[in-house]
Length: 522
Image (cartoon, rainbow, N blue to C red; front, side, top):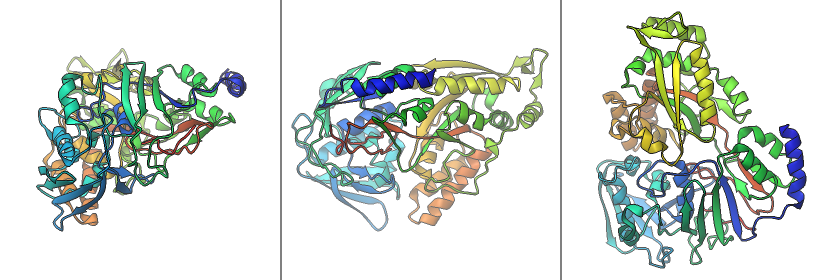
C-alpha cells in the first residue's frame, strides 16, 4: 500500500506547483515549549534559535571543529582559567541595534542565573566572572579550567540576545518575540502550527564553514508542525515542502527513489534514544531491576521494525565513534536475555503471580512512563511495554505534547521517561545528565554519587587529553554498572531535501540539521 501511494505521489511531484520560490518550507513533527535559549533543553527550540540567533563560536560540518562566529578570535590563558573573546564590529540585532560585549555578558549571565534555572547552566563551566572591559571584548573567567568551553559555546543555550528585548517582553520573551543576530529574524509563532522567520538583510557574519557569509538566500523560512506521519510523507513527496529532518524511518527507502528528492546525512549520528530511570523511585531503585528491564529488550527487532534499519542497536550510552568514548565500557545492558532478566527480578524479590505480573510484599511491579506524544516515542514505548509484559512488568504509558512534556517531566511524578538526546562528546553527554548539580533536570535519575561527581569534575577541568579521557572513562563505567538508563538505539539522522533547493548539506549541532542555512538557495 505504501509503495503504491509513493508511486502516485512521485508522479504528482513532477507536476505539482513548487512551494513559493523565496520561502523555504520545512516540516517538523513536534513543537517546542518556547524559544527562550536559557530556559530549556528542547531540541525543537534549538532548531529555531540557530537560525534566528547566533553564538560566539560556530561548529563546522565535521561536528568537532570550533570556528569564529560573533567572536572573530579568542585566546585562553596558560592556566586555562581565562578566555578572551574579540568580537566582530559589524554585527547588529534584527532590531538594528549594534551588538556589544555587554550583550554577550548579559546573555551568558542569564544562563547561569539561579533564578532562571537553566538546564544547561553547567555548560557555561564554573564561572567566576564574565565581563566586558571594552565594547568588543569579553573576558570569561573560570574558577578552574573547562576545556570544553569553546565547544559548549557553540550550542543554542549560548545564543546572544538583546537585553532590551528581554526587558520589554518579560515573561513573553521567546513566546511573542526574540531579537537575535541570526541570518533570519523571528517573526511569529503559532503553537502546534508553525514558526515563521524572515531574512535578516544586514547579516554578513556567517561562520567560515559557509561559502556565503550572508545575507541568506531565501526571504523567509516557515517551519510547519505536522505530527501525522502520512501527512509529512505526502507533503514531501508531492513537492509541497522543501525539506524535513523529521521524516519517519519507514519512508526513507521509498523517498530515496523519488527523482525530485535526495537524502543527506551528517558526519556522525550522535543521538541516542533511551529510557531513563528515576532511581529514587521505589520500584526502580534496585540495580537488579534496572538491569533486568534493559536486557529484556530485543533492540535489533526495534531497529528493524520501528527504525526500518535507520539506526543501530545501542548497548552503551555513547556511540563508539563519540570523542572520548571508552572502548572498555561494558555492553552488558544491550544483550537480549529475557531468561536472565527474569532471574534478576526473582533475585530482587519480585515473584511472578498467577496473573502473569510480578509482586513484592503484595505490591504489583507497575511502572509509569512519561514520553513525547509525537515522533517515534509512542511506538518505542509500546514496543518496550510488550517486552516488559513478557517478564511480568506492568508498564503504564503517559505521552505528552512537545509543548508541555518538559514541564511534566519537571514534576517528578513518574518512574521512567523516554527521550532521544543529541551530544557532541563524552564530556558533553556525561556532564549534562549525571552530575548531581543537574538534579532535578536534566539529571532526572536523581543520581547523586560523589565518585561520579568527582570524576566529572576532574574530566571537565583537565588540561591534558589523557587525564580527561581517563576521568570520563571512569564515569562511563559507573553509570553503566548502575544501569541508570536503558540504551536502545543510536538513531540514524536524515535530512530529506527537494532537489529544487540548491547547495543543501546536512549539519547536526544539537538536533539542527540546517544550522544557519546560509548556502542553500532556491
